Length: 156
Image (cartoon, rainbow, N blue to C red):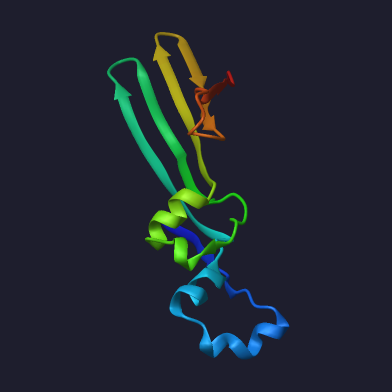
C-alpha cells in the first residue's frame, strides 16, 4: 500500500471595506458572522496500491503454466473539482454539511492488471510454448464502461 498524498487548502476570510475598519470592535456576533466566510479550494486525497504475483501449476502429463511477475495496480482519488463560492459563517450549521452541499466533488479510480503467462505443452512429439500477456485496464472505474481486456499472444 502506498499513500500518494493528502492535501487541503481552506481559505477563511472577513469582508470589510476600509471605512468600516474602526467599527469591527463594535460589531455584534451576528454582524461579524455575516461577513466572515470560508471557501473550499482544494481538499483531495489519493491512494494507490500495487501488488506482484508469481505462481506455477503443473498439468499432469501435459505441461506447465506459470504466472511470471504479474502486476496488479489500483488507484483511487477524491477531490474538489473547483473552488466553492464563499460560505458565510452565519449560514453554516456544520462544516461537514457545508462541505457536502457547496462543493463539487470529483472521484477517480483506475485499474491496471498485467498477467504474463508462460505455458508449455509437451504431448508426444509436440513441444509448444505460449507466452500470452493478459492485460485488463480501466482508466475510470466509476464510469459505466467495462474495463478493457487485451491478449498479446507470442507463439514460439
